[in-house]
Image 1 (tube, rainbow, N blue to C red):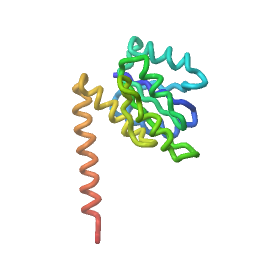
Image 2 (image 1 turned 180 degrees about the vertical axis):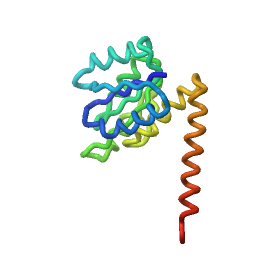
Image 3 (image 1 turned 45 degrees about the vertical axis):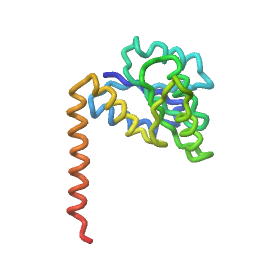
Image 4 (image 1 turned 90 degrees about the horizontal axis):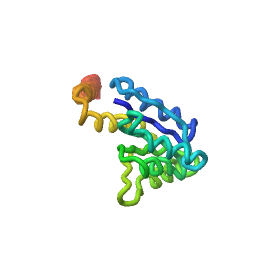
Length: 159
């Protein structure tokens, strides 16, 4: 169980860390790297081309602004790529979201919410759970814990 998280910039790390935390809580090995679709395109392409042979099973690609990184990575691998749009200072992340979600036919990139690192990690875990039954059980426990927390909050409500 191995997931790669590729960030377009190290400034994406505060968002990405939330996803890394969840992956580790589920016992999924994760490696994070900074690679740019525009400033280090050959490095990004080489990584994605060799990701499957390196044992990765899912790639999460975090990018802001033009956000071409997820599509560039997806173009050269058949591994599932999850695009994580990062909120930018210019258009509040809508530019990133639109860049990632509007992939051409034939090169799909799953896309989560702007700054949705937790859901990117959980989607990667859901994908991996098709192969690893232990993750199915952990996902069921995670969902139950979330539901239990809501029930406790409801019980504590005094209005």
